[in-house]
Image (cartoon, rainbow, N blue to C red; front, top):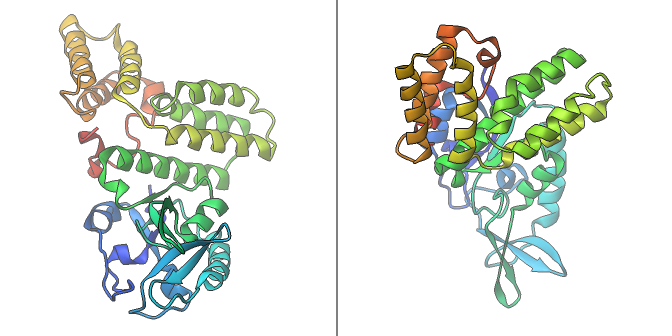
Length: 314
């Protein structure tokens, strides 16, 4: 797959454009994920016309609305940010982004966790930055995360699975959209969906049964349900269920010792003694050896580039 276009808060690439004139380069993003991703940097504060360096800003709640204000002089930049965001998002809608990584704790970029101030001081409430809020409202299906949460292996795995699935969906929509093509798209993702949510696995299966009707509502409902299901975290129990399901395809091929080894690895994974990559590696070997057509197309076995080594930690 060609590199995926992903938006990113510009300071995370190392550009020294933060309020204090520094950058916040995240080397995992630039050096590791950058092998598979084409970054599209965005800095709301600089692009809306604020200088570098500049006075730090905060979110202030007033009359049930959030305002973006400088911390000492109290200058209100809310209108400036809102107008710029509206125009910038119009442009982003044509850039083919498949995801976005935001800067945590930023009053403009954070997806959440920004302390909200009031006239009496910190309110104890937290919210998202103004640009991040506008982005997720405009593009609710595009996978979005912040760099701090991506340091957690579970959040990182989940985000990247959604990212690569959404990119495949974009390619599907841009090409053939016949009923058979939609059925094939769904079929290739069935085990991946099952590893996140049995409910969505069932619901999407029923929806696909109506795929002969190619109204846009079918596609819209399908991708909404798909991304909703994939946002749910996978667990060792869910993965074990899928691994055993895959193992069942080889019951007529494997010797007693091979079956024992495979089931033993799956059990060791279930108990937390092995990463998911270990039983998956053996299953991929059997898929190649015994040429199982259905399993050969399953993105569950290879949901993202191997060099990211995500499932070594899962």
